[in-house]
Amino acid sequence: MYIDQKDKEPSSKGEKIFVLVLTLLFFFMMSMEMISNYEPRKLGMLFFVLFWIPLLFLHEFGHALMAKLCGWQVKRTVIGLGGVLHKTTLFGAPMEIRMIPLEGFVSIAPENLHWVRIKHALIYFAGPGIELLVFLLIMLFLGTDQIFALHDNYYQIALQSLAFAALVGAVINLIPLGIRTAEGTAPNDGLGIITSLTSSKMDYELWIRNNQKSSD
Image 1 (spheres, rainbow, N blue to C red):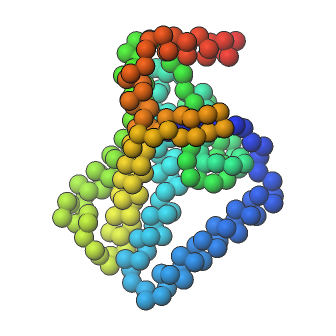
Image 2 (image 1 turned 60 degrees about the vertical axis):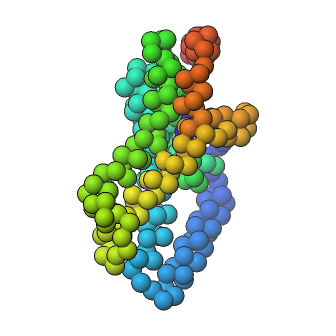
Image 3 (image 1 turned 90 degrees about the vertical axis):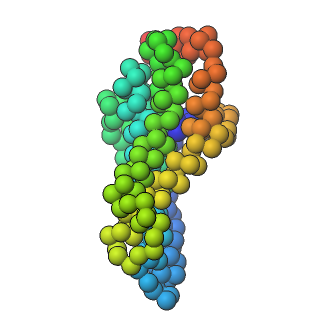
């Protein structure tokens, strides 16, 4: 999804240590649970959590890629919440990697009104859409009879975990919801698809004018 956030300064050493301690504690508790009466399929829980981070990047990359394909401007991409850990670029626009990999956003802007509603809806859908594609590709690779089967094969457990993490992420983002931010309430991907198709051209004209003013 692309929900703007207030900028934060790069994380301090204390913040990094705090997040590291919490992360280590979380994985320690998960490890204790897996060690107790261990069986390979218990690793699915760990794989699910680990795959969430690259899938978050893939989700936001999907938004940015579709925006570029639609001829829209990609202004900024943010992966995660909290203080900034690393800065780079994506499609020539700034990209930030933040401390807590729970959600992210892509800041975009239309260049013109050509098919503007459809393009906006496609950009919203592209994030969960690319996750659904991951799930479908893995399901086709494993087979529909194997995707839900219980296994002790580590390779298959990892693929199943990746597939279900992608599916859960897509479904959560496609449920129409308003997300509270520091600037007010913004739509998630599901609600964004609906609002983009029902918005007036005047709304998009105002968006284009405001973006041009901010760029001057």
